[in-house]
Image (cartoon, rainbow, N blue to C red):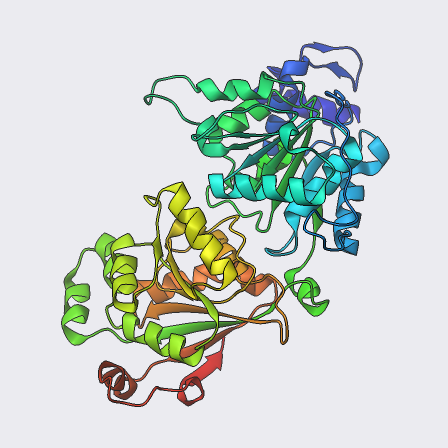
Length: 468
């Protein structure tokens, strides 16, 4: 109403983006300021429904296949179809932008393909890594009628711009030095894109936010399992990508069998006395790492592996040296940020085929890594209180499984330390989704047993546990 219009004009950040007032409740806005105005309005408490419409973009014929190129029957799950239709909104301006939130393992990529098929337009897909880029390419080839030559990869390895181009956030935000220009952001103008898909949109880097502010005339789809940004910029996602269109509870899809049922365990491991003394006198900023690298976690990892002798298992951590020691002692492959892409692909392929059962991974496997047979994850260290990371790591094991469709997530924390406090913060998002953590306090007598390899394996039911 007119009163609200007057109130908004009292904000300098709003009035500076308005070109002209043409009525008591009507204003002209330059197209280039469309995104920035929405950012300003949401910051003063007024999120905008943008009905100004979109450019159609370059036309592209693309349909979903009824049978994959691998010979398997293929059709959208009911919630995937509903999510795509909600985004499409019959082709009106009420659709065409927004965020779809689905649990890890629920097929967000398939929803992206369905939206592409609905719009029939050239598409730019932005992903978190080369691994994710190639997974998108594989899904496009396997499940759509699109020919391989119509799909391009734009990354540090190759820069091929096609009607459907899959690029990484890293290459878009690369520059020669801190004051240099982001040369690869020009990709947004290389074709007449009708749709831009932001995979793992909660990780959208600041330079891409800035460019997206000027792309409001193009349809935009954000995909994520956790619309939680540790930097607090969720408002920018809503303003520039669009409002949340779909948000399916994890437990609902678990009940329907579309993702695995997961049991979450917090295992509190005592620290050896000499290390506890080091921890007590350490500076506050050093205490977390001392606790995270507790050497007695190694024995607990062995116990968990013995408890799940046949399961495909990921050992996940933050500190590479800790992971390297574990990998060497257990004789398992290690994948970190310094592992070359060809080697990463080799490890993932071997893990998927069952040639290797155990894989140690750093933060590079937090996002968009498809390992459908992984059913156990052991987290030995993490990024402080990151709710996003906790959910994404659980997500690595939520792909539906044959048989019992059961997964186990173990997070190892040092007892009575800041790591235990951070673990509580990490678990908040998953607790809101309905997950419970079984708390296991490992008593000192059991801790001594773990150091004695002649002792029989300690079965989990003997632990003192409780739900919190």
